[in-house]
Image (cartoon, rainbow, N blue to C red; front, side):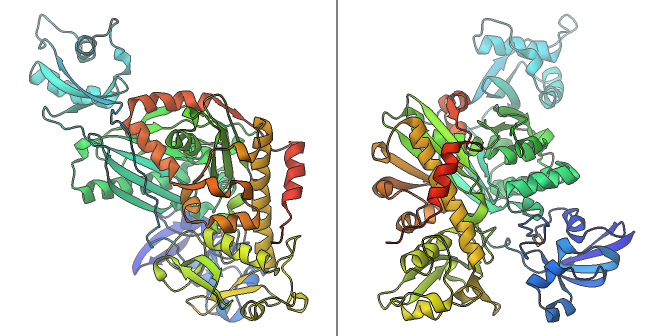
Amino acid sequence: TVQLTMLREGIEEVRKVPRGTNLLEALQGFDDFDFDAPCGGKGTCGKCRVLVDGEVSAPEPQEKRFLSSLTLEKGERLACMITLQGDCVVSPLFNSSGAAIVSDHAVYEGTVDPPFQAVRIEYAPPSLDDQRSNTVRVSESLTRALEQDEQYRSVKLPLHLLNRLSGLVSDTGSSLTLSLLDGFPWAVLPRDAGPGYGVAVDIGTTTVVAYLVHLGSGKVGGIVSGLNLQKSWGGDVISRVQAVIDSGPGPQQRAIAGQLSRMLYRLVEEADILWEDLRGVSIAGNTVMMHLFAGIDPRTIAAAPFIPAFTEMRIESSALLLPRLPLTIPLILLPSISGFIGADIVAGMLATGIREQNKPAMLIDIGTNGEIVLGDRRRIVACSTAAGPAFEGATISCGLGGIPGAINRVFLSPAEEMKWTTIADDLPLGICGSGIIDLMALLVRTGLVDETGRLLPPDELPGDVPEDLRARVREEGFFIARRRDGHDLLFTAKDVREVQLAKAAVAAGIEVLLEEYGIGPEEISRVHLAGGFGSFIDIESAVATGLLPGALTERIVPAGNTAGAGALRVLLSARDFKHVQELAGQVDYVELSGSMSFQEKYVEQMFFSQH
Ligand code: FES
């Protein structure tokens, strides 16, 4: 073995690993490790940069694409490209987290009537004449208290509750208060317990957000968010699934469970509440994220016929999935529809109320995949387009998630100069989804990108291109800005291609669903644009690039974090808790792979129309 020392924020951590271990894999073994490896270790993104001191393998050709020989000599390397040959000290160089994430607020508007209940039960104290088990005693009392006809479903009393009851029932009294979720007991509450709190979680491939909500008022009392720490295994779901094929679901389950536990600790601490006040956690995410959180191998989702291990709503004990919490609470894993239409979309449907409307509405979530739902109270259809993570920045050379320093707006000033803004007004670090769409729209409008998606070289520019833009065009790409470390941020021909593929997939998906539903865009009452991207994107830019149909411009509304809002609804409304389970079964899923109609539309949508 060799000794690997990791230095982060001045703290040293040491591990022994077999000689010849890949450095990225070795780093993934450190607890709570926060590291960017968007391409999942293929050597194609150049973002897993580390400073290495020690014996490692010689530079690979891929590394030379991203690092100059001078940089390589200084010890800067790509973690996924090197193997450890002797003892080494490593410091990660680029880390996109640590920075606060721009998070979406989610609110609940409606009657507060949570699926959690506090029920006081009375029972006869145990004695030599009455030696019934605690299970039977409590179950009988619960049956009486809930006025149920049949004996209460005693076998469902969870083990941690039996443990808690054993002291209480024998020693003390003849009554206690139980906290129930959907009629099943989970905890013993103090006599004067209030309605308590719940936490709604949206596990995005890129960002994880958790909302603390008061179950009495329905008010959100705290939000925490961070980049999903599974990013060490790749920026998109396919890389994450590939990592499971290589080393099982365990490492990524531990990463997300550790992260979520720390978020819960922070919420409890910052709101200054007691752990005992927490009644439960609801969780939404795409199907692969739901699998990875549950520690279930998702590999069959990634290849035809794309079969998930589970899609139903599950209520699991935190003791199993979040063992670091100081108490056991129910975790409500929201249902999914298919391998590519996950619980995040089901939650989004709940939040936007699509199923209850008289006129068809659309929900579009452009994240790692582009999921689209269309329907009303009569019928709902949904599809998922393999748009890829271009709009989350992962496949764009200078792309970033929505973090401070990400260029989020690009526009032409009245003096025809290109201007940009960054999140939190920080010095630029890269460009995020809304900035990418703005930039693409600008390039298309001014003819710097032609109809076929070709980024024109300097000597082919049309005569009327504004001077400032003309000066930015280089052989290697379009100059956006100088990064804070002095490097130039360039939008390359390959970046244009990535956006082109992604926009064509989403636009074609929208057309297929309209066709499937038998309506034209003019019949849609509203388009809810979900997610961080949906909130920050400039609609006109999205229409100019052809990502969204122009006919819908007036009816497109940013919907915020609909996955988080749906997860909140499940905590705050017993009706929605029930409804969400039915909803998942009421959607007709339209499979696009192998669909001729989709293929044709996809090819058509590859073109940009100049305005
Ligand atoms: Fe190493 Fe992408 S280049 S993870």
